[in-house]
Amino acid sequence: MSQSMSRRALWMQKIADQISHSLTERIADGTLSPGDYAGSRDDLAAEFITSGSVVDRAIEALVDEGCLVEGPDGGFVVAEPMGGENAFELPKGETLADVRAILEMRLGLEAVGAALAAERRTDAQLDVIRLAKEAYEQAAKRGEGAAQADFRFHHAIAAASGNQYLSDLLNHLGPLLIPRMRLSMPRGPEAGRDEHLQRSVRQHRAIYDKIEAKDSDNARILMREHLLSALELIDTMSVD
Image: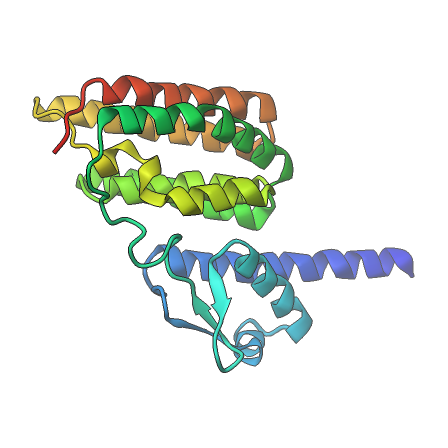
């Protein structure tokens, strides 16, 4: 009997993960935008042909990850980007020294966060990190929006760390975390800018791979190397 219940519980969790994955995909590809209605408990149970208790598991995970919030009618809507509607507004009076100081602070915090994410992440959280990684790759190809996508990648890892203080810190600092949001790339050849972006793409992939493999030691090392690369980058950047 207990073995049967265990199989049933595993099956219910699998369906809940499928619901979370499906809704996360819709948010990532723009089918659902911030403020859009994602559905009520009953709506989602009917759509995915499952029970309300399974939907509750999926919704709880997405609310915890900051993807959904409860609406006034009891349904759920897509959350606004972290930090509110001005999350990516460029601050004034920025300097290279400001960015360097922030990056130095991030070296220790986010390296530990990546290690914790590798140890603690759920499958749903891994999906969020993967989608953020892919969004960054697409933004790098387009040549626009990479800074915002970069922030979402780093925030997704912090959320998966299970350390609320780390996640809250990234939310609070918002755009100050990403050098390219405050400073412009040097006015050199296009190839130079592409090289920096592609290196970052490769580093994001490597970090994701270690988190997926639950390799906390190498996740920590690669995140630190990634941020050290950003420190090197700001030495070639100039204030807009």
